[in-house]
Length: 257
Image (cartoon, rainbow, N blue to C red; front, side, top):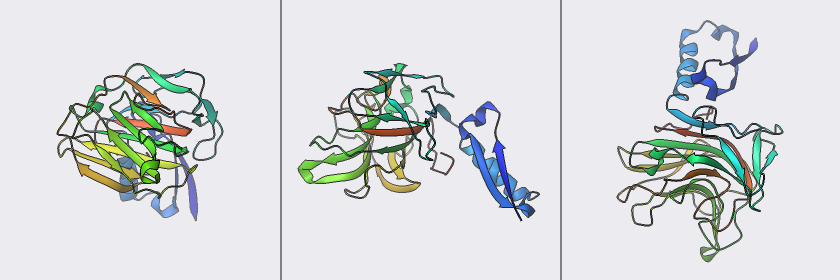
């Protein structure tokens, strides 16, 4: 017989994990190995989490206190990746975006520590010819995640993460062109490993691009953290964003992210 268990984690350091739905056989109830696996998985997903925006009806950072405010209008609450109303934000591309009131985390400059940025995204690919458009998570002109298209090389349907300081050594990791249709939720995770100077991009828990970079740092991230736009973008993002997290270490994608 199967038992449906809702495990609601109350301690603050597990708040990012939300509510977990565990479906398991009854005989696993007293299985120490199974319980240890669950506990270690939840703990691993919380260690190093320094900023977390669930975007479930507001833009509060429930871990690090870096709350976001609407700028240039009001982004619209929309259904999240599970289809629940009011669980994500939609950016129309008309001028509205979210921005922190103070500078975002300094370690995103690539010169201080490893880090991970995790976000869910669903949207359009830009119709223009500028490859720096439709950046939906950014900090200043120095880092971004985007839905990439560049008409000059007939490229669209590409997911990309990058860093920038205007010179060689910037990180650029992305998928091949034409792989990803519009208006489908994707889980993008960008990691920077400062020990090996490696940048990696995961899509839906699969490593899609990785490389060694970093000869020209720090990146230009001494600015606000933003959702729905970037300081280097000429065109605002059009689509939805959900569940954005930042870790001060490399954390590999799991279903709990």
